Length: 319
Image (cartoon, helix red, strand yellow):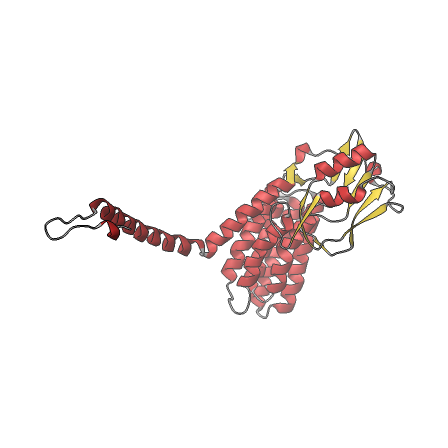
């Protein structure tokens, strides 16, 4: 377009100086953007950066799915222990992962109909076409099928927004891939374990959101939710199973459990941590060929037992 504006001969030559200056400026800008792009991409694919990005998503989901322990409302067990044997079964003809659930809309419908709904799935669960996803009582409640289906959204892939365990699995996946024979990078797995331990410490003084919705003093909706035991299982089971042959990873896993137990004093949660420590010990005794590595593992296991029984600090040396 600029060349079309060039006119004249030897004595009367018109050169679009402003357009050429703009072109030179744009060329310089392109070079600068290329340099920035190369630098940006090289830093984004760094494993520490990847772990930090996934950690932020995980922590955001963790904060959304938990609440301060002081805000917890104690519920009467008799009010939620209901008989669902005669309830209507709601089947979903769609296929995919449950991505979003509108609990408020479903609770409003149940309140208006004088009904109760018990969901059998939660965000992240895969729904097979024709599967039962909810129970509704009384069975003659009008519009139950449309209300349940309308309150759910399915997708071909999982997302980390309302799916806490998927957020944790994304972080675990980094460690599992690092422990594969083709990569064999235990340091990355250890970095992931540190972040997982930090997440468990983050919920030490928090409780997981309740799956019970009450309107006007009456239970209208029950739904499955994530709990502490499930979060710990997702965080450590796959790493333990894939890292049984890496003593440094197994030893660090026990250290992370001890550091978590230092801040977590709930007896039920401590029992979950001890159960995982016992699994690590059992796998280590079978996989470790070096007696020194096995001795270090025993030492960390005893340290965890001491922290569980008497409290911290967990960073203590000695037998």
